[in-house]
Amino acid sequence: MRPMLATPGAAAGPVLVPQGADWRHEVKWDGVRLLADIGADGLVATSRSGRNVSVGFPEFAGLQSLASDMLLDGEAVALIDGKPDFSHIVDRVHQSSAISAAQAAANRPATFMIFDLLRFDGMDLSGLPWADRRRLLEDLIPPARHWQVPPTYADGQQLWEATAEQGLEGVVCKRVTSRYYSGERSEDWLKFPHRRTQSVVIGGWRPEVGRQVLGGLLVGTPSSSQGQLTFRGRVGSGLSGAAGRALQATLAGLASDHSPFAQQIPAEDSARARWLHPSLVIDVTSLGTTRGGRLRQPSFQRVRTDLTPQDVTS
Image (cartoon, rainbow, N blue to C red; front, side):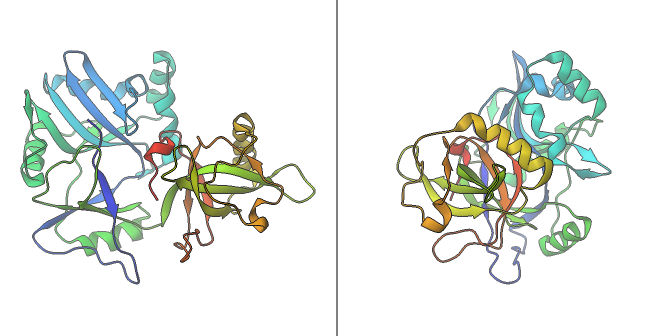
């Protein structure tokens, strides 16, 4: 089972969140997507890429006391002053030591925001309407210290405005009749982030003129050609200071003799370029894209160690 994905909602001009009784709306959490599978092997947590990350989230083991067979979908978040902070949760998916994971859980506990129920007591619920799955979920999962079933809202536009004021990530809108499509991106789920954030793959970097420090990233999205990228532009903002130095150190281990891009990169972008194996995913914010598909004024936000290039869409 792989998580169902939301389609970006239309954002031309004012954001138009769908309204009416056919839709319900949830807060979009800034965390790590997880499926929690409770069965004969205890609780097995898998990331969006399908990797077993159970060791990294010992706080969620108590969910086993609620049922002997259950599959939950949700988002693991680290709440700092009441708001999710991605930087404090993403490293959990790479924990391999139970001792260090327990220390991380004690110092900065995670909360599992559970928003879907896909299996219960041997019954596959993915074919049921979202509204039915949601009712069962609310009946079965009482709130606890390390997990909760966040509320849904009837007025999506009001939620959009409220989450903007509170500095939250955005909203997700779900059609109440929708079934669960494993591993698919469906228009039955729409996402409206407050920041236009996109995940891209780094294919190369450029040093600053006259210096050997990171000055720009050449990024793309996977193309139809296996292992190649479609060029989406050059990222120069957000790379100063410690973040840029840490990223440059990571890129040193990805050096390649060949460009991973499917097309010829314009000379103004490729000058002094150092090519990389296209394996590292980052998030960037931008003002959208040009007609040619390039990101407008992109800014580096963070490394997405929880994603692989195969998880990135155009």
